[in-house]
Amino acid sequence: MQYKLVFFVMTILNIFLLSSCDNPQLPMINFQVNFDGKDFACEFLKSEKEYSLLKCSSNDQYQLYVEYINRVKHGSFRIVYPDNSLFIEGVHVNGKKEGIWKEYFENGELKSFSYAIQDIEFYNKSYDENGNNYSGLLPVEMNQYNYKDSTELEFILAYSNLDTFYTGGVFKYRLDEERRIEHSKSSEANRLRLKIPKSFQGEINIDFLELDTSYYFWGGDELLVKVDSLHSNIELFDNILSTLKNIDIINTHKSIMTTSKKN
Image (cartoon, rainbow, N blue to C red; front, side, top):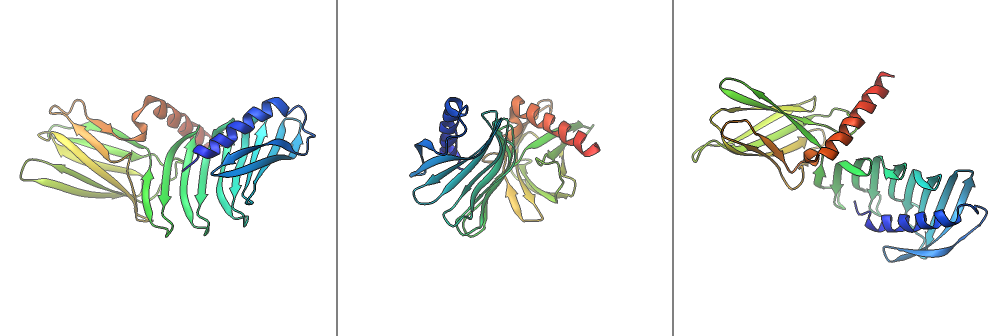
């Protein structure tokens, strides 16, 4: 999703709020910002104690709405086209993107759908103007189980809101110069397992498929597993969970979600 210019707007708004939120009675903020070639002028729609709702309007009638709590973005964020149809919608929590964010084309078709945790997108689908899927991103966890004659790899598709969906996977690897393997798996529990012989050493390329929508995902440009000769250091590459920071964030999120479901 193309939020670079949005964040520029939000940065300007943050600077203004720090200097003028003590005077919420001002009907109009006397400054302009530029968003995607459009000048926006901003005003308070509502200001009560720690809460503020701002509206910014462009010369060609695009409008941006953002909520603040204690001078920090907290609550709904929305940009609408001149006909008042949605362009971008999402939620901030303590200044960071959280939960579902959507962006739309002018014809109302969905352009992208993402799920964010602490400003990081952990799940994303993007579309062209005809509604065709062309890219995606989701976190994948990998577990390894060692047996006498084989090693089993378990891939867990950690869909951001922890709901399950009907999942397929295509695993491609080469056993030797003459044998190239392409193996398909499916699961309704977000878990796919692949068993490889102890003799295998090399790379495994993986495509994941959301079977309900025929939507392909890639963890980066391509999800890749590298298998060493002893199967003692099998690594998953080009995955959003490749960094410890991301793993910590999603594990914390999963813990919160699990607790909330119990309650």
